Image (cartoon, rainbow, N blue to C red; front, top):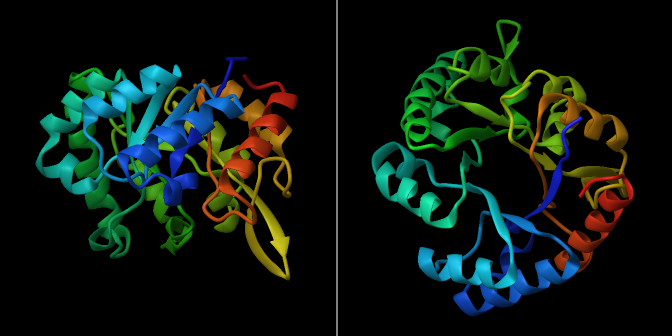
Length: 255
């Protein structure tokens, strides 16, 4: 079973990382928790070289990013250059743009276009992944949008970034979806689900109801490199939530 590293998805602490000064403090707090890697998503504007200096200063690896679709579709070379600067080989997008949410044909069009973008990134030594939510579990003639997206894209050029919470939220089986992507999924979003006041919401890893031993085993089977800890909404200080998730994952055997 492949060793899986623990990364902090910075979207979790986005409200505390809006300026370069806040980003510097935030990265320091993340490293002090114990994380050695981050996914860059949702933070405020900062020069690429300045971000690289901050990461290096904290001894943090950038394991992947969420990058804007318009940049990837229309101005990809600066994206490639930035990821080479950051020594970050994995690029992802955070969801399906609304113009593609037009039934099965929209998912098919996205699959074609994303494969073309992924081909360009692969030629530059990078990977390209899609991050799901739960709306992709709507069915069209018996097939979910997510199934159409992955089945009709080129597996060499479009990889998966499965989000465990959103698969569960959509009525899917996180373990089954993870196992579908052997050697096609470098990063998984680890996100737990709990019932609070009768409604589904987010929880720290291990504090909710998802089956983490089975999820971790599935990730190891398919070659996942990084478990990116993400919590969209926290019931406490988001850095404390990241710390709870980190401690619980370390206790489960992740590094």
